[in-house]
Length: 444
Image (tube, rainbow, N blue to C red; front, side):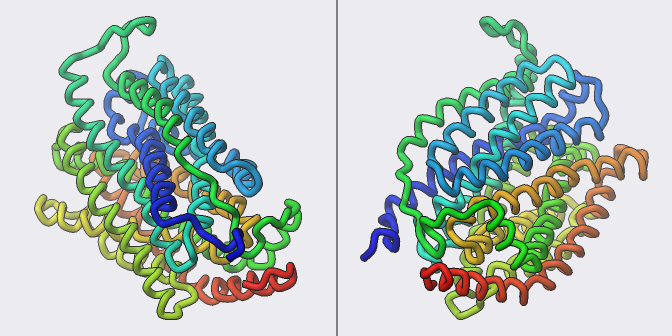
């Protein structure tokens, strides 16, 4: 068999996924830990919910998206392992820098650096996984990698809650060279050090050969743009449909800990343990279920399986948004489990869908554009949209539940419309890829 058509052994392929999963977990812990630390950071920096939301979202998202596209192009032609290692080192150093913040602008700079570093991970990771697994197992493999979203977010809440409880009991600590640090600062310093150590683990990844239509073909940037324009209906419905789901997810998850604290009287430590555990379990199950369902449908001949799973998840999520209006705690936790499960379902199949409609030499760039869209819209705007409703529409901190419900529900309706519109264009985009390969002398 030609080397270009051979895949690594299952053991090697799943080792790659496992290491990339840990990297993704670390990235989401660094990204999401702020959501549990709203109270102490607001108090120490003397900032509002809206200013806090800019730390959670926009300051990170803008540079994550700006850096993502050129880094995606590098992932299509250079060492993907080396690119990821550099990204982990940068975001870990900048996470530690956040722990040294004394003023609001210090924190903004740190979050910008975290965003720029994390932009290196997913385009390269998607490309590595796509070249490690055949198409009929790709959605599942990418979904396992994407579990890092929920394992990382859950760990941020769970470990963060435990550490916050412990650190608050200890009070400020004095560290060598750094002097006195507050409990929330210590968390960022520890996370930064852990990330730097993890860079050594990345050496265990072995680059697979590039495979599929377009493998080994040098594609000028203008040709990438021309190809994307040729399938623009599929790209727009896909990117913006999943971006709406990302908007709802980031907007809600950024404020759910605060929702539990303000509306239900839980402590940050309790939120961290209860909600963090729920996110890790329900989110991981949901995202892998989405990938398995997509592979099952594809095996039965469904050529738009990844898009259909996204549409199904949007419909189910809309129904589960009632959770923010429930006061009975056992019922609330039950619905919240299903809410997190359905929210998680599309975030493995969405990047997997890109791999099915793009030539190999364009996958990293197309993935970066997808990440650009969902991150700028989702993380960049979602948390701030909820905060603006709370600060300026309701003008009441206790109305956070209504802000989450309205923002998440309205934008999820938008996702349903866009993903439904995108089913036919997506199937046509798969045909376009086949024709492109034939023109290049590489039939699918």
